[in-house]
Each structure stands twice: as C-alpha cells, then as structure tokens.
Length: 310
Image 1 (cartoon, rainbow, N blue to C red):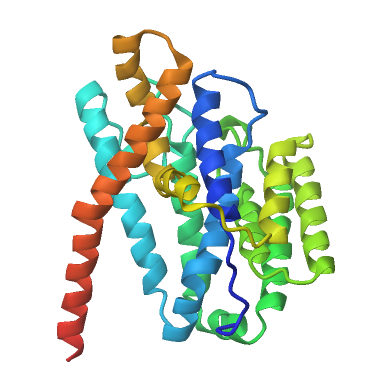
Image 2 (image 1 turned 45 degrees about the horizontal axis):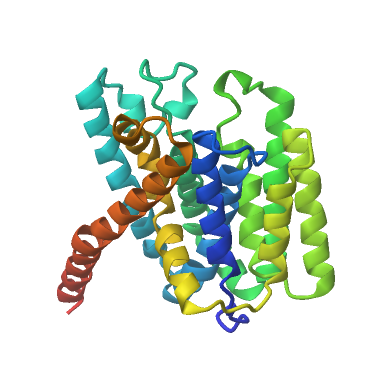
C-alpha cells in the first residue's frame, strides 16, 4: 500500500470546486443542474481520505490523522451553529451536536446542515473501521481486496437498511444510506487497469440508479472523471482560484444561506451576484480560519506531542 502509484492530476480539485459551486447555484435558484453535488462531495470524502490520509495511518499504525481531520471539521461547524442558534433562536442541541439528521423535525427557522452532519458521521464510521488493527493490516497487505469488501459491505448495508427500515421521514439523510458513496470514492483511488475502472464506474452507476431512482448524469460523469484519473495539470492562473474555492467547500456550504440573506439586503434578489459573493466569502472565511486558528492549533498540538515523546 505504501508504494501505491501516486496521482498527479488537478481533476479531483476541479470536481470538488464544481460540486460546491453547483450546490450554491442550485440553492440560490440560479439554474437547475439536476442535483447530486452534495452526494458527490460524499464520494470525495472517501477519495480524499484514501489519497491524503490512509498511507500516513497505515505507516504510523495510528488513526490520529483522521481524528485530527474530524476535529478540524466538527469544531468550527459546532461553533458556527451555536452562534447562529444563539442569535436567531431557539437553541436545539441536536443541531449543535451535528445529529439533527436523526430527528424528523427541522429547526423552526429552517436551518439545515444535514450534509455536514452526514459528512462528519461518515468520517467517524471510517475512523471506527480503521481503528481495528486487523483491518489496517489487511489494508496494508491487500488494498484492492479490502476495497472490494468495503464496497460490497456498504452496498449490502444500504439494501438491508432499505428492506427493514423506512428512512423517508428523515429524508433518507442518514450515514448508512450514504456509506456506499464514500466506499466508491475510497475505492476509486486504487483502480488502475481499464477493467477495474470500468467495473467501478458501472457499479457506481447501478448503485446511484437504485439509490435515487434515476440516472443523475452530473453525479455519474463526475465519478467517471474521478475514476479514470486523467493526468491533467491546469495552468496555475486557473488552479489558484479553483483550489481557493475547493479547499473552502465546507465553509461555503456552512455559511452560504446566511451570506445570501445579507447580500440580498444590499443588492436585492440577484442570484448570480449572490452565488459569487457566497462562494467567495465562504472560501475566504475558511482560509482565514485555516491561517489563524487551524494551522497554529495543529502546530501547538504537534509541539506538545513532541515534548511528551521525549
């Protein structure tokens, strides 16, 4: 596993940029693209963990990297949600604790962060899986077999859940019904031959049709581009703003409705302008947080670990 082929392509970053941009544009009714952006970001959870975290986890034999990743997501989300509830009211702990997707009643003011809640819950599920030492050993020795097992298990969980429990009252926004998305993203990182890529793509297409009742062409095409791994490096002038927005996708999702509410008081109902403003401000908030909170906090944590290891 540690010697697995590295991937040099800007496609995953571009796909993440497109997903969050389409989500905001769709929410603001700028245009209708057919949906699926949030689902594809679930795919990217698995892909990014497999690409950026898994090797470190297996080499160090520790799940600390994914623990840190979860903490980096959940703390700002909980703080932002708490401030939002304190300002607008009423305060609901299921929203603050990022578990409101397990309750059928939405916040009276319409606040809904189901995507972020499921996003975090999927990471926690993967953390639990990777915390099992034999699983880490198996991944280190037989990564492709492990991916097949992960895919089949996640699909089986989906079908079993559908058979025994109706989640429609929760709008089907529960992690066990979306685990297969993360599993396909995780596995996409390790597809190499044309046969593997084709099989993965066909499996994803079939599962997406079964799960959502139609062929979501945006979702299917995005997964195809992620799987085939075209080694494309775009000009830096293009990738700089693309990366800026893609990296801030979580903060963009977290804040875009509130930013829209503020912008409409200044420029009235202008979906195009509101979309650009929400994306830019949300991404900027992430980079400010990352520079002044996240990076210093991580540095202090690493320094503390270093002193204790002496």
